[in-house]
Amino acid sequence: MTHPILTSGVAIDRNMDPISAPGIRQGNKETSSSATEKRRCPKVPEWLLPSDAKGSSNAKGSKPSDKCLSPSDAKGSVLSDNHHYMPKIMSFGPYHHGNPKLERGETIKLKLAADGIQLLVAGMKDQPIEEAVDHVYSIISGKVEELMGSYDMKSIEKYSAEQFSVMILVDGCALLWYIFLCVCSGGDHEDYNIGYQDLSLIHQDALLLENQLPYQLLFQDLLKMTEPELTIDCWRVIILEFFGMIEESFFQEFFGMKEQSFLRKMKNYCCALLVWITQIIKRKSETSDKESKRCHHLLDLYRNYLLGPTPKHTENGNSGNENGKKGHKVRALVGDVKEQVMASFRNVKELMAAGIRIKPSPTHHLRDISFTSNCVTACLRLPPITIDKSTKTLFFNLIAYEMSSDVDHHFISYLRFLDSLIDHADDVKELQSAGVLQNNLGTHEEVAEFFNTVSADLESNFLAYKDVRVKIRNHLKSHYNSRLKMWMTQCLDTYFGSPWTIIAWVGAALALFFTAVQTYLSVFPH
Image (tube, rainbow, N blue to C red; front, top):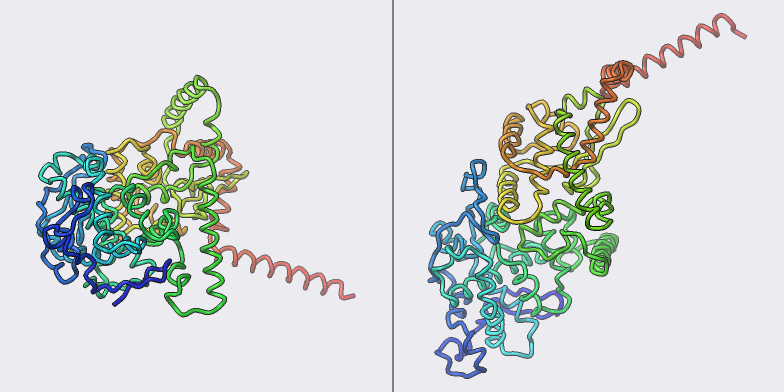
């Protein structure tokens, strides 16, 4: 079976030996430059051959580590459940490499790497494939110290530089090809012995904190060897589609993987064009925001897109001289603490009793939380979210990442904000009725217990969602200080709280109107 390289139209036979040159497989009988000789990996060919993939792993294993790219004792009492950090099918990186429970995943990974290496070397059509593979290995081995420094040294001390380079080469090529396969090739996974149940588990494994590969290696160093059209920005969008953060899988159809109508082709073309223009504007704009800095790994990239852009009021608040900034931050911090002490934040049921309605935000970004109010009623908009077993694992890994690195605790702040709204199962029920929360985990009690437990001992950012909290507090204060507003809110909730009561009131009003008209006409027939 062949897998076409989309941008070049070149098809490389998957069953072809990608690195069969005697200079690699038979003791370097063919000479090359001294730099290549020093960085040559003699065991890479055997690892990447599809026919030899089964059981072809001789790198030393390493014990699972509680640390990742930014080592820290992140797993405390709340995060002590280790099964949320253990890969189920496939390991990436050194922390879980060699785990006997992942032998089947190792076989799958080696087959994926065999095709992944062909995706990379397709950009070097003027070189023999064995030299192209050596070039890929030379890039990794040339930065081996930097790459090894990305991990906890205690967990990789058993690896030599050569073993580590081989492992990163195989894992990086396998991950890139798997992402490419799922998004751009219509999910053709049967040739790799990947079942449908394995797909979600591999997706989940790719977002584990202890299963990350350096982002610079994947999307800056390795992608330089692909065709020019496979740019870093293009891969960012492909990854978002891989993780289900783009609503329509337009890449599968845009690249001609399915038969489709002309109108649908045009629709997908417009979608792709819009994404491309957005990426161009993003590159040309000033990137002063923290989230625009280089990502560390896939989990970090996923987190940045999950959080969404920084609100405008936060960006505007960063102007002024340095002293003014410091003074403003101190005053804001003190004011926020005072507000949290004065205002005991209400749960969903109590907010609704005060005339606050819960509605879904227009986007799924966790920063997209807003509050608007009028004289009597108000509206709190929250991003839609789905809670299931995989969500729990993702949440624990995002929490551990923020606790083990120097990034701001934006995700933890979101969990704390949501926890302040959820006290009981009734709160979960109301959020689900509002279209904000989809419960695929179990009972509403289990969801409420999860949020109340996971964020109990976490430290959030005091300034997160500060404007929303202040507006809610002001609305509650105005509501409970006015008997008229309380009475009007109670009437609206009692008599106009559901479509059925509204229909009943409209029907009664129409009946009363027609009765009055009939009475009038009977008294004054002319």
